[in-house]
Image: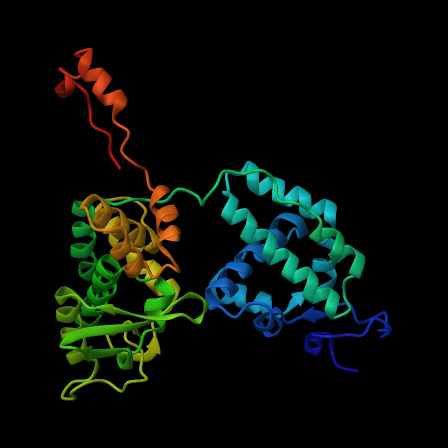
Length: 359
């Protein structure tokens, strides 16, 4: 009989009788999930929601990054199954709504837990009627959309672009950070798209530099690379492959860097990209900024500049213009009626006497 720490059964028939002394049975969600969701972006989101569910409903400690992956690779079956029931599931979704999560976020959270319950049911660890009952739990009413994010002004974007190289502790880190932030602030890539990009994704088509982007749902598209990104990439290329015309095509476009400044062959992770954006924003004094805020800010800046929605939609790589319209509608639109009314009343004449708000 294997030791408790060695036992990791992904599938166990319901008729299997386990000895009483075996109590720590685990379930490998990472191995089981690809059959239900192919996108790495979806996997990461599901892991986050499942971890939050286990924290809230099973009393487990929160995890992140590698620690979270280890948890998903060895979920404790008894604790997880004990926390899964229609009543507990309904209570948790209500909690998410009370905490201000939007309709889209709650829908994704619901899908994550239902997928977990279904996989456990297929493996024989959860009764079928429990999984079916959870599927009948409807999400609570919530506001449309996601949590509100930041929409940076063009001046704030420039400050962020200046700050990213400054937080680098070595020349290689400065150049790498410049590539990351310049790409995000002009090409509106998602952080996982940048993390997956390779040198082979760069090419010249019709005398234009093109980057092949591997997006959500295994969709690939091509984006023209602007000159600032090309200049940043050229400096970075000379650091990555000195004396060579170009790094090997299959190697990562942006990479991890060791403390001494030596460049790793491994790709920079999505968490690494998040860290660069967050630290650069703090250094620039513009408050908390997430990578997706830059994608949102690019779309907003182009809209304010009068760019056609078709062009914005192609850049964001949405499936159709209607998706882009919904995306842009979630940005805080100008609504200056109150400001105009205060002008009519002459209440803005003493603006200089009022202190300004800080970020």
